[in-house]
Length: 160
Image (cartoon, rainbow, N blue to C red):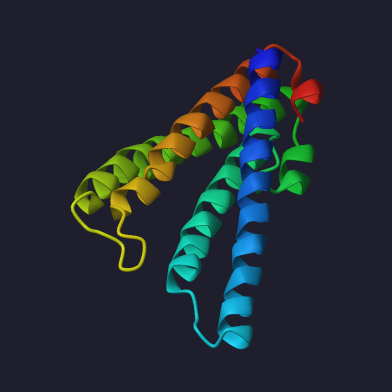
């Protein structure tokens, strides 16, 4: 399980990093075309906005894999170890359900709905850009399941 988590996290870090570098390059291109060539590039601006969404969702999956998502540790730390384990599992279960309902189910719905619409500058189906929602939802579900297994098997310190 640890090798699967490590491999997926490395892949996500690579994809998010490449997305960021491409966004920086495209933004520099936009500045160059707008202020030097006096002919702004509309396709690059549109692509940067979609890549930002992809990078953000991929980054959110990285955070889930590292159990870095939002929590209130002061409340959990005041409880007994058994209750702490239960609360950690509850938090992961809530993240799992959110990913299932909002990202996977909702993401599939919105991606299918948007497949018939084309972007204005790129001429690509908008649904292609929404595929990241169910993709990251499945990744989040996998990571939260791995987190729960690690919490229950008393390897929580390794998972954090």
